[in-house]
Length: 316
Image (cartoon, rainbow, N blue to C red; front, side):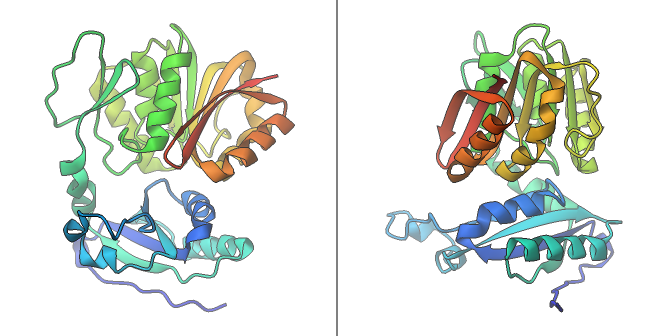
């Protein structure tokens, strides 16, 4: 099936290409799962919860107020050198299989514009009882008992501001023990591995399918001064050695991808290993739980914030 693609030429300064797909609001979770198979550099546009009657309505951009609330869009950002034809073919096939009818839009984005524009909104945030996520460029004096995690997420996901990240960090405080061997699948900026290390983990492995995320994670680990974290590229668990089980595994991804890794993750766990799964939109939580229980796991804890859910999971 032929599709029309919109491509804007931004000249030689363009370092990234954005692919944007729009779908009915009810298909947002599926669309996000599909787009995350291409890259973790995601941008989600969902204006359905904008309160038009709010007294602050006059502070909201008119284009947002007038946006179609029945649809949502997900964009991925791909670096120069990416095989766009192959990527578009992959997305077209996946969207067709899911029954999502949409025409991807392509545009060029300058890396500096995209990577730096949001920094003014990224401020220190305390999560749980101990951890405080502090932007690398911000000054912060820790209070007694606080553990500081300095981050510059750059082009990768993971600032601590999103509900999915906050939920899994709260669970990390409950389940990380001194000396633990930790694996973070889909590490993004490396924030979870760094948090685990700050909480006393002995060895942390952090992997991501996106080479940009791995690069950013390595930079954050280096800047943190931690020496017990290894970052590497892997498609979920495919590049992870299963000869020695982990004490704790984190996966802040999306429901469909967590379900996809369910049959394999047990090989990396001993009887007391805990898996922390996040990035699950609440309506899909039961699907994840059913898949886990069908493969011999039980749910230890469930945390929710807004429309997101995180689970602590263990072998039965």
